[in-house]
Length: 320
Image (cartoon, rainbow, N blue to C red; front, side, top):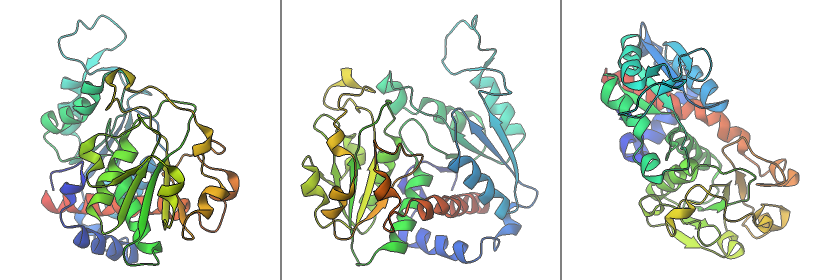
């Protein structure tokens, strides 16, 4: 596996899931694969779970790890072509990337959407430059449009906690005070479409995700109807994806607090488990009583980030 961005990159899901549980049973089983190999993690944005879980996964596999925070301790990087660099950006990404590649065997990249230019974001401009110019295998630690390590961990968590063979999984939009990217819901939708679940997406009208991620999911604008009989509720805010109106891309066009997941919402489910990628804004996305309830599985979900990342890095090491 030379790159990891979308669910298709992982190959057959059954095999990937079996590998995940094998690694969860023995996290150091493949430590020999990473001996004398170096992972470089590049962060253009803040991180807690991704930084910690990815570094831990690489160390479990015997790798050395270099962490570069582009916004602290490095030259400011220009990402656009054809610009006159007379501002505060001292180095161009096109020189920085191959230099980074000289010092490592594999690169993880985290770069959020700018939420002003949909075409630029959905072209994955920054990530694709790393793939093209680094000369090294590259995996996404969240990008402008996807967060596959999170979605893989979500699927592992659902498999561990499901009580029926084919559970009903609902991705629900929830209000937020800031404009957030669509990366997490995009990837969650993509991975759920590939999994053996009944998948429903619910959100206010106008918040439709890109069709290539929605896939075969049922889109239900009535949140209560969507929640009925659900076994898992995955709450996440996203800003307007600009699908129905491109001018709305990246904007907050709804702050409807009736979409906040509370005890009443969860009562519509079939003893549903609550999920969220974290960090979560309490009182906006979810109420205290729901996220602190026995049916909240946000911590096991976060713990599985180490496992999903271990599978991905293991496969990349095997391909070196």
